[in-house]
Length: 200
Image (cartoon, rainbow, N blue to C red; front, side, top):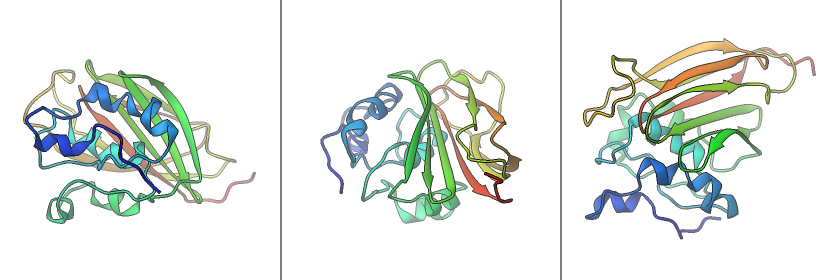
């Protein structure tokens, strides 16, 4: 159901700096392509040289048949990303690569039942992600809960003290494109739930 064989989050405790954003942007194209990967994602309390937005997105981006989140329950309990972590399934029905370049950025959409989850992360430089929703079937409306990083001046400079996540909700349809600014070593997570039935 899952395998190790990956440079994972346990190395954040070691002498090395642990997996950096370039490595994390590479794994969806390499190790995780060949099967379930026990990376132990979502590290908020350790210094990782990534943002909380990127760490939260790993819960969707990395697939494992038995997903092990890396941090303490007490850390997740008061975190704004907790509802997403509670909703993310361990098994997916469909995966769609929306965009990506190994080592630089990746945006994936995954489906479980009639719900979709989107994760987008990037490495150095930050970027403006354009996320088309044309993978959604039919003409129905979805509620999008978006977990993004707070906007601030000088968006593309990495800071050791990271801003908190912001959570907002909007209605979307298959013809929409979401535009999200990602910080250096940053990420965004989106949970899509159908609101009105599709005519498909």
